[in-house]
Every structure is written in structure tokens, then in C-alpha cells.
Image 1 (tube, rainbow, N blue to C red):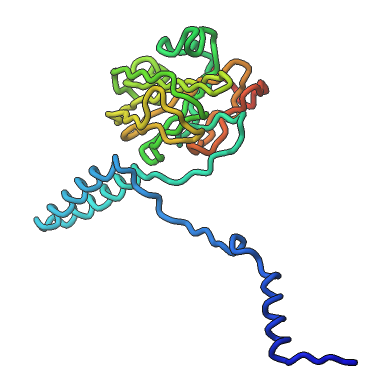
Image 2 (tube, rainbow, N blue to C red; image 1 turned 90 degrees about the vertical axis):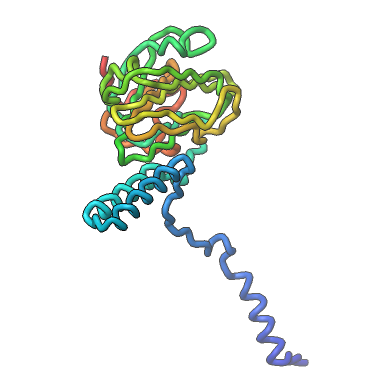
Amino acid sequence: MIVRFPRAAYTASMIDNSSDLRPPPSARTEVRWQFPSVHPEGRKFGAIAAGITGIFALLGWSVVAWLMVGVTIWVLAFFRDPVRAVPQDEAAIIAPADGLVTLIQQVPPPPELAGPDGLGNDVMTRVSIFMSVFDVHINRTPIGGTIKAIVYISGKFVNADLDKASEDNERQHILVERSDGVRIGFTQIAGLVARRIVPFVKRGDMIAAGQRVGLIRFGSRVDVYLPAGTAPDVTLGTHTVAGETVLARIGNATATTSVRQ
């Protein structure tokens, strides 16, 4: 005996079954590029620049007004705060700043971070990242853990690209300790133009790897002190991306860079 189904029922069945062959919604989701948000710390500076621009425009100083339009855009861009894809690697020491690796040296830890409760007293590798006025200036923590110390030191404002900036310039040391006892110290250093280091965290805070910890206004540098037995995975001249570039992997002693003594 042959059983015939109504055509409408057969068609509906085909439509329902075909939905099983469609890709899941996540596979069809599109990711679009968006302008980075401006950090609240920079909005007031953008508003001031925009206000000055408006005054010059009302006065009829069109040339100066257009120059101030450029300044306003630059100020907003300076304080941009893009989203970053943080590597999910327990061994990774992540770059805390956008910029150029200008120094890789064997040095003792800074006195403020030395000793048994800090980084110890042995010579260790320091990676210095110089941020130009065109780089993102939001700084992030190289590892997750607990902030054990934050030490702010007032100082000079010499060129942050110079070696002596680590000892002479205004700076802020941060020490982070993981749950397994691994400690990483890094230092935010004000530069020739930078005039303020703005912290987002405090001692005792629990932070995740790549989390925002502060910013330095208008050009500066960040030093990272690698633990013993860890060599840098970056070279002099590498341009790092805060929260994404892996500077080193804990326990990997195979150096991939030249080191200045």
C-alpha cells in the first residue's frame, strides 16, 4: 500500500528539518571595528581643547581654530582605551604598555621593590618600553594576582628614553604576586612631557592578567623586571601592545634577544 502525504505537510517538514543544517547563531555573528572609547581621565582635557577651539572659531581666528581641531582630536586619541585580547596562558608575562622596546638590561631591582618581601636583591632582566605621544597610554598588569606594593616617587622629567630615567624621573613601582608566589615588579616612569601618573588600583587589590592599572599622561616609559630563570621573548625594537604582547614566559630561560650590560 502506498501512503501519500499532503504536499503542504511535506513542505513544512522539509522547512523544519532544514533549520538543523543552518550554522548556529554564533557562527553568523559579525565583529565590526569600532572607534576605541576615551578614558574618563581624558574627557575633561578633550572638553577643554574643544572649548578653546570654539572660542577661536567665534573670534574668527579660523587658522588657529582648525589647528585646535587637530589638537582636540589628538587629545581624545591620546586617552583612547581600546579593548585588548589578553593571552590565556598562565606562564605568559604580558606587556604592560604600548610602545617600543628600547632597553633590555641586567640590573638589580629598584630599592623600593628589593628585599625578601619584594623581588630579592639579585641582578635580574629589565625590559623597558618607551611610549611615544601617539601610543595608547593605558597601562596593564603583566600577570594576575594581588598587588603587594605601590610606591610613588616624585622626581625629574628628563627624557624617558634615557637609562637614568629609571632612577631620576617621577615614577611609580608596582609589585604583583601570583597565588603560586611568583612576583613581577614593573615601574611607570614619567617622561619629558608627562606630568602625572594616574593609578587605577591600590595595594591589596586582586587583579587579572592584562587588567588596567593606570596611565601616564603625555609620553613616558614602563620597566618590567623579569623573575630569575626567565628570558625575554621580545627583541630591541619590538613594538608591544599592552595586554596582548607576550614579553616572556615564566621559567623559559632561552633568550631571543641581545641584552645590554
